[in-house]
Every structure is written in C-alpha cells, then in structure tokens.
Image 1 (tube, rainbow, N blue to C red):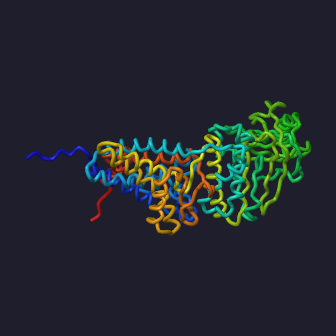
Image 2 (cartoon, rainbow, N blue to C red):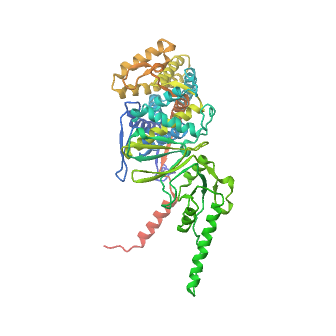
Image 3 (cartoon, one colour):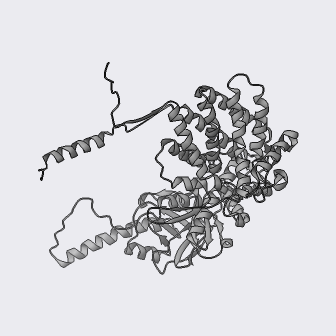
Length: 551
C-alpha cells in the first residue's frame, strides 16, 4: 500500500466542502444574533469595555461590531459588511447584518440536503432582482422644498436610536448642516451624490450645558484663543488670511556653528532674526487683514508686530480645519507670505472668542457663501455626547440619501413584509430546484418585522401572522408595518414612518450578495506561511541551538 502524500504543511488547517459552508453560516448567524436586539426604538443597549477599561454604551450596530475582535474569517466579513453599509449610505448597519445572517440561516437546510450552492445562489439572485422591483413599486417621490416632509423622514430614521427623546432638535441640526454643505438649497442640490458631510460638517462636543443649547454654526469653531492678550477678541466682517507657514525664524536643517567674537556680533544675529520676522509680518500687513490663521507657530516678535497693526492671530490650526475655513470664508491657503495677494483674502461675517466652561473657542461664523459648518453639541457627559454624535451622523446620512434620490419607502418592516408576500406568490411560478431557495428569501425578509416585534416584547407569532395576512388580503395594505414603540400593526403612512429608498435598496442588495459570497466559499485554509514569521522562527531555532545546555 502506498504512503499518503502530504501536499500542505502539517501546521495548516483546512476545512472544505459542506463543513466549510456550514461553519461560515454558523459564524454569520452568531454575529447577526449579537446585534439583533439593537434594532428598533425599543432596542437594548450594549456596554463595550476596551483594553484600557474605557466604557462605551450604545445601541448603534456599527459601533458595537467595530469594537469587536473576532477570529473566524466569515465573522470578520460580516463586520466588514456593516462598515461598508455605513460608508455607502450611512444607515441600516444593523438591518444589513441581521438580514444577511437570516439569509444564511435559510440557506442552511438546502446545503444539508445536498443542493449545490450554485443553484441556491442563482435562486437568491433572482429573488433579489424581484425584491428590488417590488420595493420600487411601493416607493413614493417627495418634494425636497417641503421642510416638514424632510424632517419627518429624518426623524423616523433616528427614532430607532437611544436619542429619540431629542428627535426634533437632532433633526433640525442634521438638516441645517446638510443644507449648508449642499450649498444652501436642497432643491438645487437634488441628485447630488458628492456632499461630503464627514469632512466639511465637523462636530464640536462641549460637555456641560443642556442639549437644547446645541446649534449649527455657519462657519468654523476652533478650540483656540488669540495668541496675544491685547489682540481683538471680536471683529465684525473680518478680512481673513489663511497660512500654511510659520511666522518665526526658521533654523537651518543641518547643524550650523556661529563664532561670536564681540558682544555686538551677538546683537547683530538677533537683529537679523527680527528683520526676517518683520519682513514676514510686513508681507501680511500689506493686504490689510483683520485675522490671520496659520497651521504653524507664531513667534513672540511676530505677535508684537501683528498686534501693533491691529491684527488678531490664531496658530497651530489643524489641516482639515484650515481647509474648512477656506470653504467658509472663500480665502486661499498661502504657503509663503511673499506670495500673498489681495485675491487670497477671505471674508467672514463675525469673529468672536468665547469662553465656554474652562476652554476658549474661536467662532468664525455668519459666512455668507459657506459650504462648511460646525455642529456645536452640548450635553451632560462625554458618553451622552458620543452617542448624540453617532445618531447625528445617521441623521445627516439620511438627509444626504434623500438629496441623492428623493424617494421613500414605508418603514417599520412594511417594505420587507411587502417583498416577502410578493416573492412567496412569484415562487409558485418558478420550476425546478431553484424554487426552494427563491421562496427562502421570502421567509428571510420577515426577520426585520419579526425582530421589531420581539424587541417590543409582544407575541411575535401572533403579530407576524396578522401582518402577513393583512398584506396578502389587499395590495393597498403594503404600507402596514409594526409600530416599534407599542408592537402593534399600524399604517406607516399615518404614523409617518418612512425610510429613504436608497438605504433600503442598498441594505437588501448588500445582505443577499454578501450571503451569496459566503455560500460560494467551499475551502478555508488557515496557517499559510508568513515569510517574516518563518525567518524569525528559524533565527530563534539557530539561537536555541547555540545556547549551552544545562543538565
């Protein structure tokens, strides 16, 4: 009998065929179950403790998964799924993971019965196509010029979070910030997909005060004070100059030796430094600014010359803050004071330094053509402010999605139940083995209303059966869903719970396509050789061989 031939390294672990597929399904289901209770307005909170013993309390699915450390590759893939959803549309991060986990779960019995994954995937993709078509049937277009409608959509998107107590204020802040970043008019920005709120709508969190004191500043707020105590702390309509160079004597890059023979020579050196700094300041004073902001330092001599000229100055501003200032004031960032021209000077409405708590904050606000803003958040503690910021990002993402595609679909699981009933009807007309996985997607889509009902603590089977019967009885009942607060069946049109079409479509597409990718994996090989690790272990072995052995 021939000896077995070893192709792979003995340290390599390998799972293939049905075993690998079932392991991936199990990992996906575990991650989905972990954040299942985070869905809906009655969601539970998760307490996360980091290695430094810092505590985060949140109901945001993406935040929970982002801080998790997992070993299984399929579980890592599921976490990546939530991050992708967050980056693409900014909302639906919990729903996409729950839905993907459910799609994997309904695929499990067909894998165990020996149906080839290709047939299952084919059925799933056909169901996805029909699901998106069905979703488009119940979508309605909205008028972006009506602030009540836009506010209602944003409110229903953040109504599922921990912050639903202050919904009205949060909606107002989010819509105002997105409107400024979009150029001041939502209707003109319709169809625009490149509104960058992450870069140009900065959130400044200041602990203390009441949440109702939060506001959107049409401009930039910096945690800075003027560099000289005699500089003006309030200027109306200031002329602003933005610099990316230091206003101090630049020392040579290489080591320089200076031999001083007399006392006057040393004085001459200091005088040369002063002349250099004075020349820098004269270049700035030439364009008659009221406010100078630089990313680098400002020496004491430069502060003196600027203060004498009646110019206020801020130093060591971050690069991204300087870019936002350029968008807010219309100024150009200059890298050498010699290149400063009249066209590089910007204008703001008001410059004011305020003391909030123990910190000084510089407000460059009331900028007329600003497409950058700062959202000032006040609250009792850092934990509350962090949670407010997470929910505010979701609200701004919803508003952005409405601008990109102003279409809505009913929330509260109504859209998912409509898709489920439509697919279950269409499944009867499909021939062959493909019919089984196709109809499984209809079952999987019910997970969202089922989870909403479960998180409300009502009888899940009874409520879901009633909702399914309502959708099947009449096509006009497609807007009926679960009231996330009470767990009862209500018309989402009357309740005013809507979701952007873009978020819902992306959620369904991502979930089903991700499940198909995991089902296509039939071999998991771990323990692949790392060259650096191999060299280190070899060096360790040689070192151990050279060590004298003690008996």
